Image 1 (cartoon, rainbow, N blue to C red):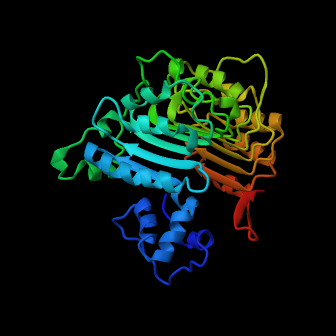
Image 2: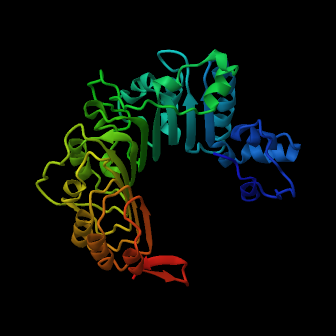
Length: 381
């Protein structure tokens, strides 16, 4: 998170935005806030008692000396955010700590009751200590993002000429070409966030295969409104188990692979979900019509499909749901003009259409579109 200094006018009475106030590039967000306390005594007094200034905490460390140095800064933030009354905290933690157990987990658990938002980026071996904690600690948590750092990205190379801090700050992100199964030796469920009553947003980024044995109950799915699983691969059985539980989800992003077969097993009943936005990527491994067959999505407005096998499943979904689709994006999908043309004619509410390598752009196709000069959109004719 970066600091918008203009917001200080509402947080600090009497504060006026200077004509030129540039950020020192070597200071992170927390140090920028700390600069406010060094302007003058009045600013320092006001800033110390503006608790909302101190609720966003970045805790990035990749070595023991850096951890201890920054822990003091974090402790200062925790203290000032508690003045008058404790505020909910937002933690953004990134650590490639060289050891089997990361001390940041103990820090998180010690403050679990105050955490409102948690963005956690750690190597894979460091997560189980947190995720296998008994439930009930994260009573105020509303947003959770878990990012698993690939093993090849956790190996510090001193030959780079950089310190550990600068080396991992570069966020190299060179994951393996083939996704592996997450925590393959873990069979017990992850329970830490199961009883997080306020949790609504969940994102998981691992570029790995979903492990149903330990991850299926990782969060209270039925409470979530925003679920982002784009960067973890699920099979058809995983998705058939998960979909009926997303009873409050408004946004769902999912990526599937073919480990469990091409066709989703038939479900005993229709699944009606309140989804407004759906992003689905089945690669070339999963038959999309089998996934969409049990779904009824009456509130769907935005649909983003990767590797869609044809327009028939899409037409059936929209017809069955009677939704007012406004935005459609098709990427690397196999479409024929006749079936897609029929689909466009059946969706008069569509205002945005994006095609990536999905349909040959011919004169016949262009004739089916019209340009709306009032909005600047090209729409189905």
